[in-house]
Amino acid sequence: MSFAGRHFTTLAIAGLGCCAGLTLIGPASADVVPPQTAPAAAPRPDNDSSAKSRVIRVEARLSVGEELDLGAAGRSVGDQFVFGGDLTSTEGGEERVVGSIDGFCVITDLERNAGQCASTAVLPEGQITVQGRQAGIPAPGPVVNAVTGGTGAFRRAHGQVTQRVLTPATWQLTFELLDVSPHRPEDGRGPDEAPTPMHPSLPGK
Image (tube, rainbow, N blue to C red):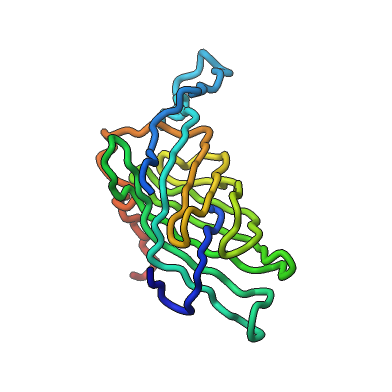
């Protein structure tokens, strides 16, 4: 597989950290409904009272993987690994693209070839953001990083993601999410189709 930029033989995920047989799963069997602390109160309009736990399994198929040699020549603190590609699922026995992923890692520890990684997974119901430390960049061993938030159905999500590098350009990702809002088809739009905000009028305009 050919990647833009400097040639390298191994890739890894940035926290988030990315072969068939993986599945995008709906509500997990261990779904948890938060206890109602105020039974008499009216339900919240955004329906977050039905938030659940959820497991999502996908593979990242990289189309971009580039090591940037910044600062001093050769491996040095501040060098980066930048990546991007599609997220795929085989739910129902049919492999299909269900989203995308991109992110980067910044080297901070030369002895361990480690640093901070951040990435964003984009799915039909919203985005999931991930951050954490990885060692062995750009090809770390199995690593668990934190889910730091998201948008849409994942706007209150937290939890963790386990990343395994299967091949230089194929990563296995297992998201274990808490406080995830259920998907509501009646919303009628995807995460990239939100209304454009109106800018306030300025005096004299």
